[in-house]
Amino acid sequence: MGLALYATGAFLFYPAAAYEEFAFFLASLYILTFGLAFLETTSNPFILSMGDPETATQRLNLSQAFNPMGSLLGMLVAQIFVIQSLRSDDYSAEAYDALDALEKSAIRENDLGIISYPYIGLGVLVIVILIVIVLTKFPAVKEDARMTIRAAFSKLRQNSRYYEGVIAQAFYVGAQIMCWTFIFQYVDYLNTSRSYADQLTATWYNMAAMISFLSGRWLCTWIMRYVNDARLMLWFSIGGVCFCAGAVLLPDMLGLYSLVAISICMSLMFPTIYGIALKGMGDEAKLGSAGLVMAIVGGALMPPLQASILDWGGPGFSDVAILGFIPEVKFSFVLPLLCLAVVGVYSYRSINRAG
Image (cartoon, rainbow, N blue to C red; front, side, top):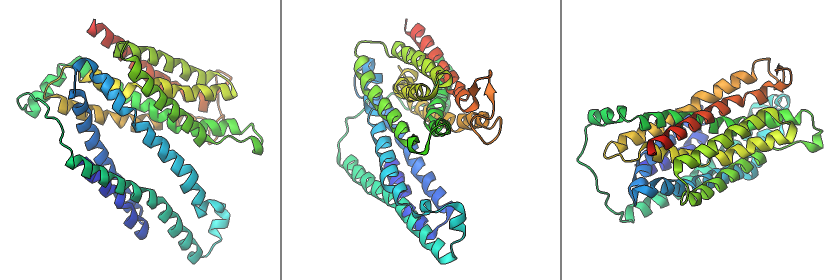
């Protein structure tokens, strides 16, 4: 079902481009995202159940290590093929407004078509994966007696490791989205003091962060053979807090390098929080998994808060100097710092529970 919704949403980008209706694009994205939510909710508990419970979190980290590959490929395709081919980027706002209606229509049709092609290709790939899944015989998973929704909610409410995990997941996803979104404004701020020839391209640093994230996932999967998952996440949380502080306090490129390095520390958090929160659960893990996926709403709630800090002094990125020397664009990364501190507290409490 998840793959079918994913493919449907991707294919709908073609008629959305043809009709040139924004609402159509939104509907396509919603359907595609529903498919992703189905996949997250069903696949992760299945992976946790496929083997020794002691290595469940390690398995989930291994499977999630493939996610950044898709994100990295998406950014590469967008930067090299899509953005470079958009004709509207060849005009300033004034020059575009000066074009006649026929010329504007041709540019709009060209650009929307270019944007829709990667989604059509993605839809075809997802259909292929769907066929492979349908034809593959999966091992049966032993399940407890079926539990009612009310009974599952009751068990989850009594499980502090679970509901604290949902809170930690919301703060983690908020930190991730903030770091990967506002790196563009951070680079724009650094570019204000650089000549035209020395301008930085934010996308390349965002891709460097993604490569760091990917590398961290693979590294953590190996380290978990020797280190307790909650203890390892505590170490990485402390590292993330320190790198956030570096992004706020360190000058010029040192601050940017610190911002990129935060992704290494975030790499293990989503699957590890997931695995710890669902550890030892029975049939209620299905409903619990849905709650952990819904916790990604933190990625929708936190960025507007950071954006509001950027707007403190006006439209620029350094209109206000906090403590006399920190521009608001850098100070805004105090929010990811606090979010990662919450994950650190959850990690510490999880170590004590395990003990």
